[in-house]
Length: 317
Ligand SMILES: Nc1ncnc2c1ncn2[C@@H]1O[C@H](COP(=O)(O)OP(=O)(O)O)[C@@H](O)[C@H]1O
Ligand SMILES: C[C@@](O)(CCOP(=O)(O)O)CC(=O)O
Ligand SMILES: [Mg+2]
Image (spheres, rainbow, N blue to C red):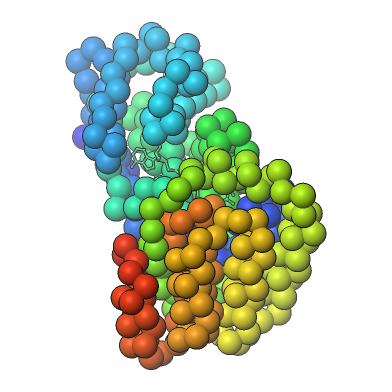
């Protein structure tokens, strides 16, 4: 049996704007999705442990699967299985689609803005290509995973799939992923972030991304977010960086994708730490807080607000 483990991510700045070509800055997080794959007798069997579902199909039918026939929860994994098998057959000379059993499970809270969708999609792609003994480079993996997120969500950026595939910290500029400038990376590495899983989401990423794309003030808000990221590049002081996080959160609120609890957590970050903002698509889910040394008051405030979970952010390389 082969095992693949893939990190999650936090978007530090630029979520949603990045879907429209504006910049973003993100970091891989060491909460991981695991894929365990081995030969199977006659079918392709996918055990989605976190969804309590098993999907089975005979190999010859996989390429003609109609993704729209499946429930939203199954779409990411099934679209990823179909896409990687199609790609390996068409472009990497895969001759025979041998049956396999793939078990998927994750440490990442699902639908919480930490990129669980991108993490499971990259895990599927790497597990299956690995099983067939075909090496995909990062660019192939990222482009394949990005096409899956776009097909399932209707709109997506490459931020999640690139960050999760490459690890570390990356910048997205004009839809292209690049390593972070060294000095900025060194500075951000001195920062400690708290990842707060605030509450269950009311809308899926696909719906949130769609709703934001229809907002009448979208362009000017994205322009403002783009300016914040220009300023991030000059910052060498945590108080400054925290202020820019707060500004980013205020701009995201204008899209109606924050919630009362996300705002309370962001405010707690502003009051008891350097700053705080929602991360990912919003609609509930997670926030990130740039920590000061002393976090006692902050933790007390988060307890009072009542959040689902708190993770000390450890960057995954
Ligand atoms: N471990 C997993 N197993 C199966 N499907 C998963 C897994 N993790 C994520 N998913 C799929 O991704 C969806 C969540 O993706 P999304 O709404 O983009 O939220 P996020 O990426 O912020 O976690 C889940 O509803 C499910 O369809
Ligand atoms: C909202 C967005 O910028 C990030 C989505 O993150 P998540 O699926 O909520 O973890 C969409 C995208 O970049 O594809
Ligand atoms: Mg997602």
